[in-house]
Length: 486
Ligand code: ADP
Ligand code: GLC
Image (cartoon, rainbow, N blue to C red):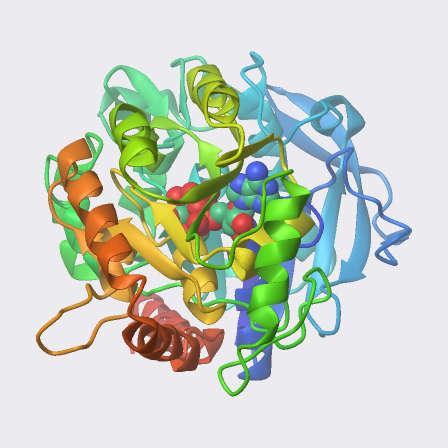
């Protein structure tokens, strides 16, 4: 099975969120199942090519892709995902990708990802490499299924190629003005017939959803949710139309990177068999945030992009009352919306011994928070899968989550009667529900035996990529059979 995997982020090279974790791990798990995977990614200015052993692909000279009606030159760097046979192709075009960040609001944002997609096709053509499946991720790659049928259909190389589109977050759709259709080199009538069009805009994601042979999203619950008006972000009708080709496969976690028994970023390693190192991690964590350490005070952690999706508006009205009524500490790592950054900065000053805030992106600190916290907060309004709650479970850190999307599929609410569950969850996405759920968690905290049992249930569960990669492979075969009519 030859797989062309197109993505805008990939660990360890470039990351803003969970898509990068998936892109760095799923191809490796697929390779272990015998797939030959080529990953295509822009060469952003933040990527250190030499550090990761990339070499300039000198056999790919004089490459051009037509974007916006003119030939755009690009070159390619070739390397591998660390410790694997997965090939990585970085598309080098400094004008587009040296912007100091992965995503922009610049007027050529469409062109930046049009180039990525055309470049992927061109590299495959130059090597005469026929993929069985093109696996496109999110709007940045969502035109791959469209280009396959509209732009490269003349090339026999792709005659048996199937297309597979993953939705990691329906909230981001890649909407551009109608003039972008010609930049993409696609026929205007596809726009006027409403195929590429959504709400008057050219929608990369909707277009891909209509053309892909198979569509997947990153948890079973989210696959159902996005077919409803409440969660479909305007695309629920399209998704219902494609319902029989839409599947949910839960993300895994990369146990080589997120594993408390080997993690090099944390103060002491620990495991389900010996949790003792977790206390050292907690002490290290609160002291790193300049807070006093008390083993009896529960520490809540947050690691997040600060966007409306993540539900921190639910925490705003209840943080003060919680702090006044309970002994607890909170450590926060994140960045994004200014109002949320300001809120967490305010909290640090309002409760100097209780709240620690780090505004920014810091991978090592994310590991220390997962390891050192007692509880982890994810009150997301919606969450396609979510990785941090699974990292928390693996690190013996009890997640407190809104029961939605992948959070609903991975965190099971603690039940006093049965003594089961691996965390705390609430149904209504309200501040009151979050408040009472945190109170329930705090009520259990002194019961060390029940707490330990809950930690162990999380730590011993299998969240590895293996099982999910097998499901992807099955769906790849399904897509191939669809195309070849077998
Ligand atoms: P999303 O992709 O919506 O942001 P996920 O839970 O799937 O949510 O993945 C988020 C990933 O990004 C996790 O690996 C998390 O540790 C990481 N992350 C988010 N914000 C930060 C940050 N400020 N610093 C370091 N890592 C972060
Ligand atoms: C998106 C989602 C997140 C998911 C990640 C990887 O960013 O917000 O829930 O885990 O993609 O699939």
